[in-house]
Length: 449
Ligand code: PA5
Image (cartoon, rainbow, N blue to C red; front, side, top):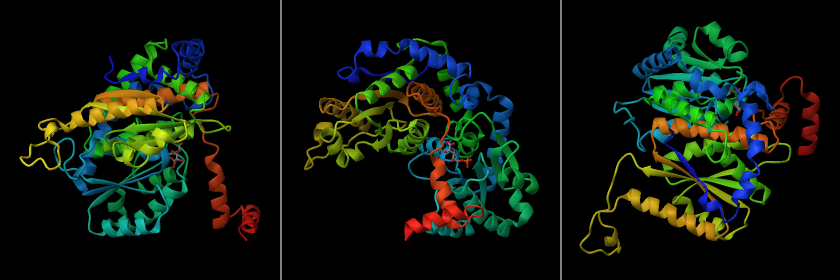
């Protein structure tokens, strides 16, 4: 039994049950290809049974290292980009309190901060300055071990940590998560004696949050990684045993979003009503954007936080171009309750809400908005989580991973590669003067004149 549920009733004015049923056979075939490792990009289907394969030995090791890192650090710098960054940040930010230093397990946690996910000089300058007076450790994550942004950040931070703690001291504080055999980071880690974790060959970046890529930083933040895996396992079991569209929510979600796409709804907005979900939405954007946006096709995944963005983008959604649909994450109960207090003067006119929970007001806003948007020809899908906790987040992660794979196969693309990402890199390397790209550099410089 899984806790999260998928509701598509608000899409039925736009998509009929018969249209959904037409995908029954095709979807079953895609599912078979995924489980039998036969579909496009089948070398990267290792994520399918990652929850099942994550055993006690790995979890024990992760927890022991996380504890050692927590004990020796006020700050932990997680270096990575894309799939080597967003999953950990998504889970940590979703499950941490809004204000720092009171982590989910009630003890002080190190402040987890991030680097290597952009090239901004001011940010990195400020980061190194901030680290001057902190005891810190580093988790550097890169599957290829050669990605420019994290490599530059790691070079900067390595110099800093080595001058602070000495080469040997620094080696005790650097944890590398990378390919088991290949890449510059692997080589350096072996040479310097860093603690390392392997990223399985058959798990791509954006599907790696349930591997040490996500699990080590998440454990360092004080979050129970066993619960995340338990939730992912529950979802994996449910999705595996249910082959029909009416009992497989990930397959149904994948089918409906493709039907909407074929009807001109080319933008999907993932909406959260809880600001803690912001980075989860970022993770989802990468998962679907990098997996599906190729061969001239793909739904454009966008993300918004309501009710905040109802006061900015709400106008467009209600009244703008009708090429949008929404998938709304609703939450049954917040972790803490807070009620609206009474006020004798009632100048703000809010006394009709006295003693109502903010939860109730937020949920009502969600319900009201969904109805308004459906009236404005914006189909709405709903994913309901009873409460935001580690188990349910594990369920949600696996739900979206499976939905993305099925959806990519329906779209007839390889959801596990990202050839388009190379184009900017090649231009950047050429313009920066990387040896071997002199011809490309000349052509690009001509264009810049
Ligand atoms: O999903 C992906 O494969 C990418 O987003 C990668 O995770 C990202 O480019 C980082 O790559 P690497 O882990 O090799 O540094």
